[in-house]
Length: 71
View 1 (cartoon, rainbow, N blue to C red):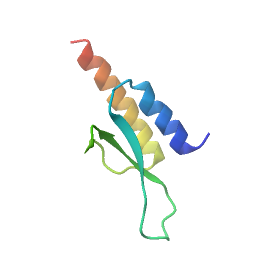
View 2: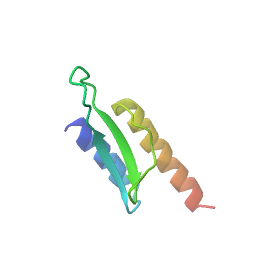
View 3: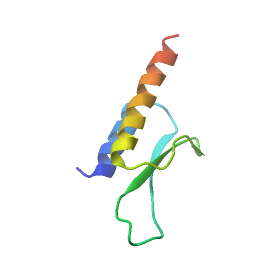
């Protein structure tokens, strides 16, 4: 499983319609670290992050969704 697939699966597990993960492509060919961002209904909701930080962002977003839906 690739990092993109793992993050996509984590995004899908949030169960929020319109939430999508995108990979940010660099124009600078020297940088090889993949970067990602989240979008909700065509509005960017996260900064551009590397794999580890995006994974933490998705986990936090999922936790926040659970808290807010139980209010």
